Image (tube, rainbow, N blue to C red; front, side, top):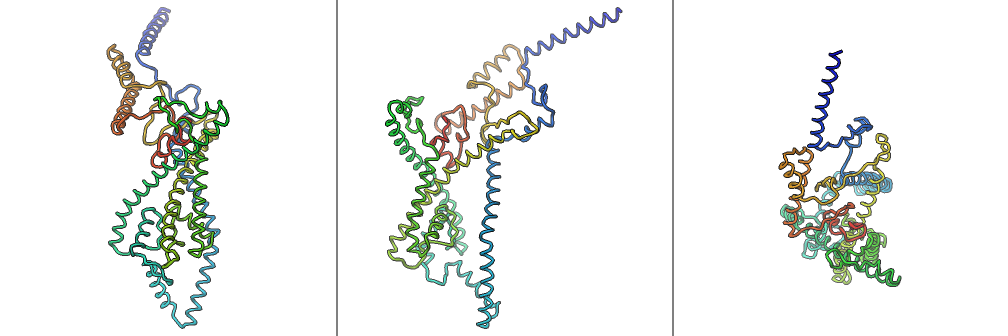
Length: 451
């Protein structure tokens, strides 16, 4: 009985010391949050790791979804074109075999000799030789037409360099020329979107003025935080309006160009429209090529009009493609929202939260609602605890280092760009971008961070 009482008192004393030690540790250390596997009432490790292992960055998930969409689009397109064009190919091959057999029989020529002659003609075609008389390929005007198709990435293929020197020069010439032309297209895109934004804003203001005083308050004449009035930040046009205008402009240019090509080149109007799309989109198959005859009526005027129409058409269709990519991106974002683990049977009742940001720029964890500076993290937490003799946890140490590194990266970026950037508190998938997406950033309603 004495032994039992002594054991109880001993266990109580030990328990008291242990509780005191635990209380002291809890006072000096923050309790780390439990992982989903350690939370009471959470699912098993295998089920909890289902979505954790498959959790992707939002931009990476969008990229993977876009790659899958393009792959399915290619497969469906191949199936459609094979079903449409394959029977015609088979009939053409059978007709050619019959003509070849009849020709060799009528003219008493062996098939091998005729085949050798046709292969020599195919080699002559590469250098620009045709049965009908065509314009010279490599005089100054022909060479100018060729370099235009190179730098615009159209590449009809009606003329190609055959010498070693010409091919080597083409590599270096295309590197600079294609890069400069893409820059030109991007600058054209920037200016055309800015112009359309001003035009649409003017119509918007006229409509709101007709609506009365209540409409003027909604017209977007509020000042920006810096005190300056920015006409494009107050009200931004919808991407659908801009896409409709660019689509209409491209259609008008294509119709006007087809009306010129059809009588001059001897094509049908449908063939002319086909040529305009293939050329303006820089696909450039080369089955139909304009301005290739030796002579034309009003030749100088026709070639000048051909050059201007192709230039304007390529710029408009390039802008239309880039604006349309925003609609495709919105569609992908809608699919990602629908895929937020609603149909995942391993995670019932939970929705998947896509982490924001992209694969290049890391995003800090949203642990504090206010902005954090280096002085706040280092002085108030790290140095303060060291002065008091209190130990910091590994989590706080890593968090302070991440914030310090991010701020240092921001300062270096601001120094390189010549000034601080305007930071936004939220992102909608368009706040960052490169190329044409960066140009359209915050210029349309669907790419605005204020949306």
